[in-house]
Figure 1 (cartoon, rainbow, N blue to C red):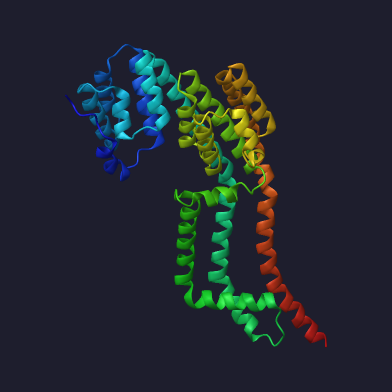
Figure 2: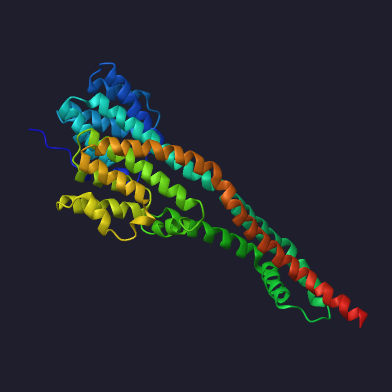
Amino acid sequence: MNETPRPTQLNRFLNNISISADEKLLFIEHVTMLLAAGMDMIHILESAQEDIKSNRLRKIIRKLRDDVDAGFPLWQALDASQLMPRHVVSLVRIGEQSGRLPENLKIVVGQQRRDREFAARIRSALLYPGFVLMLTVIIGLGISWFILPKLTTIFAQLDVDLPLVTRLLIIVGAEFGRHGAIIVPSILIGLCVLIYVVFIWHRTRFTGQALLLLLPGVRKLVQEIEISHLGYMLGTLLDAGLPIVEALDSVAQSAIFYKYKKFYLRAARAVNDGQPLRIFFAQYHHIRKLFPSSIEQLVVAGEQSGALPKTLLDIGVMYEEKITNTTKNLSVILEPILLVIVWLGVITVALAVVLPVYSLIGGLRV
């Protein structure tokens, strides 16, 4: 008897090699189309292995093919490979057990496309403000390195009392003049490290998420994306026959923001303990920061009427339309904040330069 494939056998390999979301989506789409055409899974995986360009993904598909050829169901092979998230494995498992694998794979493709679209909307919404801030930092460093040292020499020769902002500018300019080749790269490297630690590293990125939620408009966009994600994913998982506890746990694993992930995990534990969603919502602190009251009422009504999957899918559709409008308006909302940040930097340098000139003119008149 063949031994069940273990996730730990391939985890070490996958921990060091990343497979992009686009590559995963391409693989799932390939499998879905060929399966709908009536091809068996062995030949589907062999075909995918030939058509996929990524060497990394081809190695994983080869392992999937070997496991399936050895008699294991596809969901076990996927689970062992750690290629797909838990909710995808669950949908494949239910599809294989119920004979609805092609339909469930189409659901997976739809979810993957929607998740990619949600992530792209967040990136596009933050691209403009991020570009402006990055350009401001680069220009500021350039001024500090090439212009301030020259101004420092001029101000040092003036026989006038310099204001505090000018004295600080002289200190900064002198340091950049002497050690600019060290300071500028150090600042750029430090910013890259800070961005990685605050926004990317999985252990600390909740800090960056909390900072993003403080920005006007961003909080609203994040809330709408998470609500739409909840509606689509939980609705499709429940509609496919997944138990609600397992479905909530799968939603938590795929949640983008930490606060929502924590909410879904606690909801799964509460439901597993026999608590209705209505009671859990009423007892959860700060729920209004995550969901508006209308969403809570819709979910509770869907649970009580037995139409929770349909209600959740309707919520997903409704909030997808809201996301489109919010994304269009986000740059307009953030533009005044960016203007204030740039204005503060410009006015600081301008005052540091102009005030000594006024002091000098005043001294000449006396």
